[in-house]
Image (cartoon, rainbow, N blue to C red; front, side, top):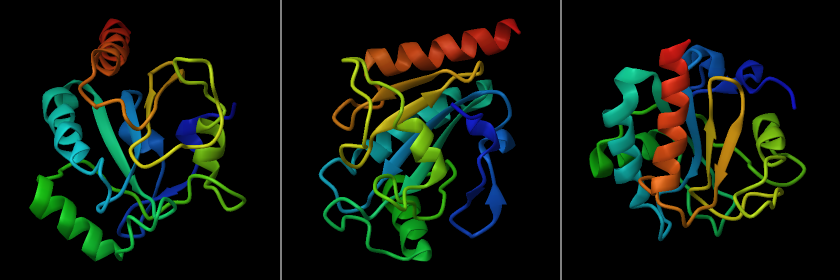
Length: 166
């Protein structure tokens, strides 16, 4: 697997960036959508950002319109929705394809990571979560797993503990 922190990304404002811009900390990558039954997960994602952000944790939202057209808006619409509806303060990236031939290179790498049941492969739906640890390891959580699930919290805390010990 290539170093995820070096893959070029674009912010929702069209500015170039990469995961390395967020240091060697713990990063949670989530494909998000504003018209999905799972959209209320934004609230818990923001809660994680507020609780762990000062310790080297960052949530990165990647808007995606590949699942039933549930993220049809333009960048400004997405930013406004996230800000006014859920008070999102974590960074949002440009709209991203997570599956298929035009899948973003970041997701090409992430989808090689198996979930807890040992299954790798395509992103199943909106709000699939990938926790990138300081050592480059990735822990994958499927969409129905809530951001505050004990397994997610354990992965974040394990990464933050290794960061603090370094």
